Length: 503
Image (cartoon, rainbow, N blue to C red):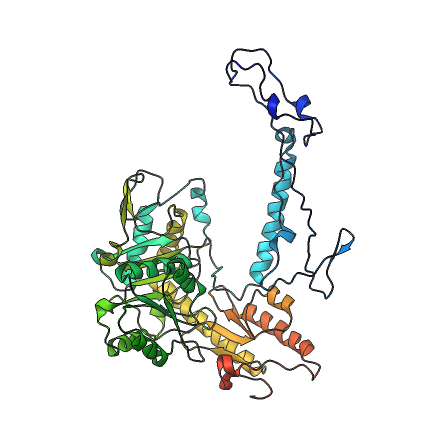
């Protein structure tokens, strides 16, 4: 502030700082100077923590509202999950002498140590979500000191030099071989999650067929319907069988109603709740029977979990670009076991040109959904693919399917409704009555159903512990004849239901 007679006086007050001093006491005020000292530091008061004047409502799960500030608060029902802010770790300003005392560092170290213990405990009881927690990436710790960013097109190097494109393209080539498409004919990238793969596959379909209608089964992942809303696409939901596969008779009926418009179809290679696999060949046959030529439909295959398992399952329908499909996506943090969310999206090179644009700022082209992309994820995927290879994944798939059958059989023997699709490792069963039990085992639930996704880290011993706890819990929940297990005939079929009416 050259020529100023006072520095920062206009914004100062006598409000106390965290160190107990006032702003005026703590700030060195420079008066009557005609020069600027670049080494001078003007202390700024830290904004006070905002205090809500409204009544804070706490859901304790009881019938009455919680008492806050001496008043009864109206009970707020949180339907899905808990209010994370009830257990948040606040960000606090360091004290002036923290650098010399080390108190702040010691505090943060203790928080992280406790958090690590929590992670270890929660991992022991993780069954409901499709994440492979059996991995060891200690060898890659040396790379965590670098900001690796694969922004832009994986196949065109940008001006940003700290990237991992060489690993990314190696991973993409591996999946291209898996899904039988030549290097010269595909384009793809490593996404930030499975949802991004679906968003990309569907937007490519929309760019190729601008007036196309999106068709997806009712049991498709929510990201498919999110894409329809984001892209303002007409979306037709198709009915499913009781086991979760797309109902091609209903699909045919709805195609014929809209025969004048092209079709963009999401095919599930494993549905979210039941792990059902849509019959890709029957979907294509239905399109052809309805008079849709190959240039009037685009198929995106959502293979988030089972897209990598299916190639190693005998009698499983084959997902391949030798069939008239447009794109395939899988998640990298699910069966592969990457410690951060990521995914792989592969499409035909001829299709992506409709989406790709030059970006001078990057000195590259871009056809991705996101801008910056995690450059560490490709390295983790490359590392795992090299360590396990096709044979390693085949062994893990066989183990998962074997353990899933074991769980389903044990549940049925215990008189518990349960279903397992032939090509799946997702075991669907009756939802436990105790929500604390659901949270403890981190079960994914929908209506009266819950499921366990048997991943490579899920051992027989872990399943035994879960079964023992579930059977013991049911002996308490249903000890009174007034309370009966739910009927799941409508959800999983009467043959899989063990309710009093169907067993």
